[in-house]
Amino acid sequence: MIDAKTVTRLDTQAQQILRANDRGGYTVPTKGLYPFQWNWDSALTALGIACFDADRAWQEIEKLLSAQWDNGMVPHIVFWQHEEGYFPGPSEWQSGRTPPTSGITQPPVAATVVRQLTNFLPGDHRARVTPMLRALDRWHQWFADARDPDGIGVVAIMHPWESGRDNLPDWDAPLAQVDTSNVGAFMRRDTQLVNAAERPLNHDYDHYMALVQFGRDCQWDVKTIAEKCPFWVAEPGMNAILRRAERDLVALALHFNLPDIATRANTRLARLDHGFNQLWSDIAQGYTTLDLRKNKIEHRLSSGSWLSLYGGPENDIRAKIHYSTLMEWRQKVRFAMPSFAPGDPAFDDIRYWRGPVWAMINWMIATGLAEHGRPDLADQLADDTAALIEQSAFREYFSPVTGKGGGGKDFSWTAAMWLYWASPNARQQTETH
Image 1 (cartoon, rainbow, N blue to C red):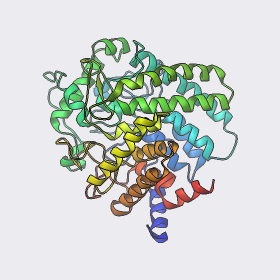
Image 2: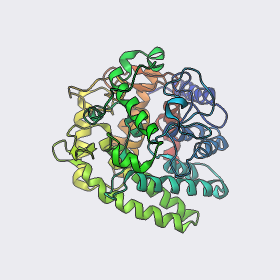
Image 3: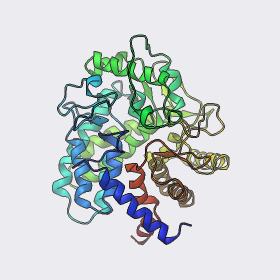
Image 4: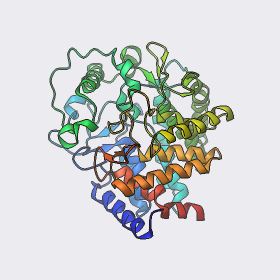
């Protein structure tokens, strides 16, 4: 149990981080390493900002959605200001947008965050939320049209970065099909700012850049991408988060009397709920990655499998499998939830997404566990997250084995998850409501 003095100190520090990372209407994930507005980072960070500045929390979502493309996509990076040396920057993406953006998206947590904010913050939010819901409806429709054009019920990603879980071992096999012969030389900045042992390898970046070049060469045309992109993968994290977002969009649309949005979201949701079963692996006993180019399913588990509980109602048999596997994993590490199967040869406790614990994934999984009647397991994840932050402060991610922090320091979404969820003060507030 963390003592009250430490909790107060960490509460204050978390607020200070979010204020320091504020760039006027949007928050950067961390200084230096990520100097722009990132899509799902920003939305999740709004939950923490809401704990001390409601108006500023709404601004975060408004600013993100203001960069929406004409086709409905909300990009994964918005380059609001010039930053010399960042790679890949606007000249690599060549999105042709003002402000410049990347050409891909990220997991659509924004609808879920908007619903959390309307429940969490006092006041009548109709005037502010209605335009957001129209933008979110267009974004979700973009997923259905651009990333599931054949209507199979799972949306694809065309780049590992779209998953938000960039460097998973899941991507190794589908990335091997990507031709990197024309990538050429480039200078990464991330490994100058962070220990290279905690970041993706240059070999991985060659593949990432080949996919950026593919998108750029077809001018980010969704039809060409769907038909020809060499990396075309359905994965449980993105699909579970989108299912959750559609459910939350339905609830918001009904609450704010927007029946047209509710109808469209319900139609999309039915397709996604049905399609999600394609990601179940009997061998892995969980939801895994499906390479849609080869129709080949991965048989190793990542933390994304548990996001099915967050995405929507899970059947009892599969839910129970999730609980027992979670407890098995927890016996192999000190802190849950590792991002990849501990004990697997590809597991690396401190390299980006190949093993570390992420506070926001823990929040999502804990939310799903609590909603499926396992508050005990949800509390364990909150306890582990709080213990990691107490030990290693507000790092980007943490080793599930040692608790050591990795990646960026003073990280916005880690601070936000502390304020909104993991801090004993936040949990006490939740219990009293």
